[in-house]
Amino acid sequence: MPIVVNLDVMLAKRKMTLTELSERVDITMANLSILKSGKARAIRFTTLDDICKVLECQPGDLLQHVDDKTYKKLFRL
Amino acid sequence: METPYRGRGLVNKRLMIALSIVFGVVGTTLLVITIFNLRVNLEYVTRPLGLPNYDQGLPVTASTELKIVKTMGEFDEGRGNVVRMEQYHTDERKSRRNQQVTGEMASTVTRKSGYFAIEADTDIAVNEVLMNRAVLHLQPKNFWHRLYFMYPGILNSFVASFCFWFLALFVSNIQEGGAFTKRNGLRLQRVGWAILGLQALYYIQRVTPTLIDDFYLEYPTMSRFSSSDFWFRASPESEFSVTWALIGALILVVASAFRDGEMLQEEKNLTI
Image (cartoon, rainbow over all chains, first blue to last red; front, side, top):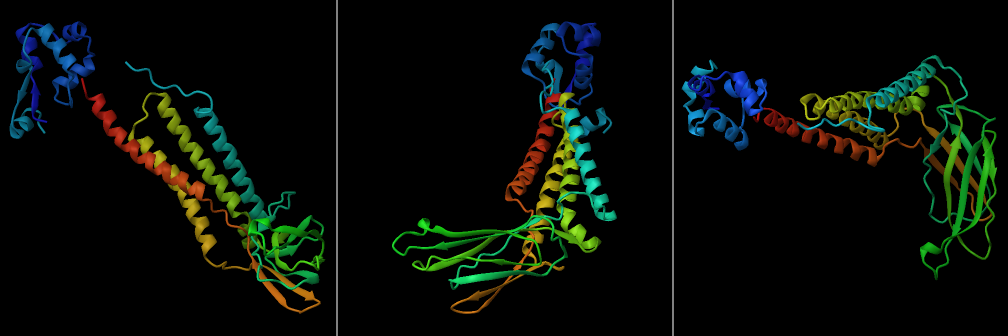
């Protein structure tokens, strides 16, 4: 689905690793990987709220809508 | 995180596997008995006959003779063969529910023909004579006749074994926390089709004329008023059961619900 989660970008800006985020947000590494890789089907508001609190950002900083072509290019589909 | 369901009591994998093995062994034993004609002391040749009732106002009979003219097997004279006849009269002033049995005869048939005496109350007209049950012990003549006697027991055992095996796998999956999977949906589907398929086979057998030799009971009567011959053709009762057909259909419906559940489970797994 053409919603991209820019987790890598925000982690780099905040100089945080995925492991650190996982510990602070209490989401497993596996689930964060699913989120990062674009395989997630949905995200709960509570989860989004927790990530935004830790990364000190807005949902719009994490979520980006792209067109199908760009999405396929990004994830090599 | 939700705790996966752990089966308790009857819903456990080991019991299902045990039942599957038991039914498999029973089915195999019956098949071996049938193929090799092992004359063990099982009443496998006993089948209640769905005899038709004759209700067209039989004349009063002094005695009536029952003969077994033609069968699929050899008549076993030494066993407890029974034919039960009942006689009713109807008082015209009362409703049909007030029918009373004025004579009842159960007789052990020890040879190929037997005599039954029905004594009618001469003050009351006899309306019906019902031959409602006959249990005849026959030894089948050849392999195909043996199979015809035995196939319901064999099929029921193997289908039960098959169903319990897949239910064991299904229960095992649930105990591991994965109820809604494609595999479980397929397993339920197989169980449902097995039960429904078996009932369909029995229904076909019930509605189609018997293609092989059947039981023939000749039922001539000797009466003070008339002498008539009444002929019956009887065949073994069908194993078809509407209840089991409905259960099979219900399991198929549940299987389709599990397939939908699988999609929901996948959505849930990919929801962060």
